[in-house]
Amino acid sequence: MTSSHEVASPSGASQQGTPGAAPAIITASGLGVRFRRNRGARRSFKDLFAGKQRRAHTGEFWALRDVSFTVHAGEAIGVVGRNGQGKSTLLKLVAGVLLPDTGHVTVHGGVAPLIELTGGFAGDLTVRDNIHLTAGLHGLSRAELAERFDSIVEFAGAEGVLDTPFKHLSSGMKVRVAFSVVSQLDEPVLLVDEVLAVGDKAFRTKCYRRIDALLTEGKTLFLVSHNERDLRRFCSRGLYLDQGELQLDGPIDDVLNRYNAEHNS
Image (cartoon, rainbow, N blue to C red):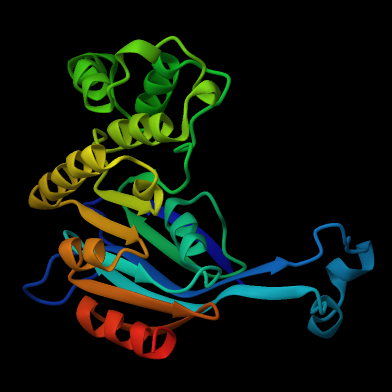
């Protein structure tokens, strides 16, 4: 059983692609993630060296199983499925914040993740410190951040909360700040997981314009949403997950039609 998350240079020789197509930017093969329903249960030392039969506790379930796909640079992918079917788990694997139990995912370049309400920000740090920390972790120099700082703050409407600890912000302001920072990073892949549903209508409109601009620049988008209008607007391709398995990988209209036929009829 092997598992890995790799980040490769965009110019790496390991990229794949079909003739005339953009190079592969994300490659997933046989991804599987197993969780335990009873978090209080513990494995014994013997379990670590036991066979599969002993390790396969009844309290375990596969959040994802045998999921494989390739994404090419510039694609906009909508991840579709009911709650609890592995969509957020898949994005966390691509982001590298979760490791698979089986399979591997390779990302050619960095990832700008907005996969939870806090955007991964530190609650005890101020908004200003979080902006500097996140930018630094994603490779922005001090000079580059200085050039973008005012536009980040203005986009979020965060002028009055720069020195406020992030944990004291409202849910809406957390999303504003997180999206504003993440969308200003130079990473080639943007991951967005439902968080835009928290913001108000005016801010969502700003976010939509920013996403349109990023796609025009050739960025790759992974979008998890239950909003069909958003999925059809931004995405040309869909991944339909059900019971942790990839049921369909195809044009977004086909994926949504299949999902609706199975769950909304």
